[in-house]
Length: 175
Image (cartoon, rainbow, N blue to C red; front, side):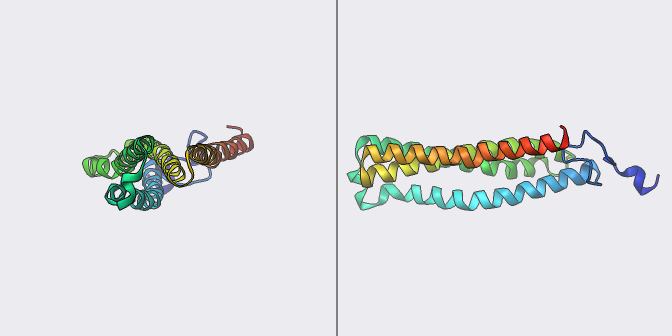
C-alpha cells in the first residue's frame, strides 16, 4: 500500500472540510482539535478574567448599594460565568479522560458542541454584566436598553453573520 492509498479523502465529497484537503481522518481530527484548542484559549482567558472580576464584586464597598433586582442580575451573571467556565473547560477534562483511547473524532465533535454552548452562556454572561453595570450607573431603563443592544449585537456577530457566510459557502460549493 503506497501513501496515496492511505489517504482517506482524495476528493471525497463527504469530507466535512471539503475535497481539497489531502489528509487522513486521524490527521483531520488532530487538525480540528488543534483549531478548537486555539479558539478555547482565546475564550478561556477573557472568561477567566470576567469570572474573577465577578467573584470580587460582593467584597467591594459599594456592593451594599445595589438594589435587590440588581443583586439578582449580579447572581445571574455570576452563575452564568461559572457555567460558562465549566462548559468551556470541559473539552480539556474530556481530553484527559479520553487520552490515548482512539476517540479523537468523538472528542472533537463533543468539544465542538461544548464550545458552542460555552459561547452562548458567555454571551449571556456579558449581557447580564452590561445590565448590571448600566442599572447601577444609569438606572433600569438604560440597563434594559443596553442589555437589549448587547444581546442584539451578539446575535448579529455570532449567529447572523456566520450563518450568512455559511449560506454563501454552501451556495458556492453546491452542498
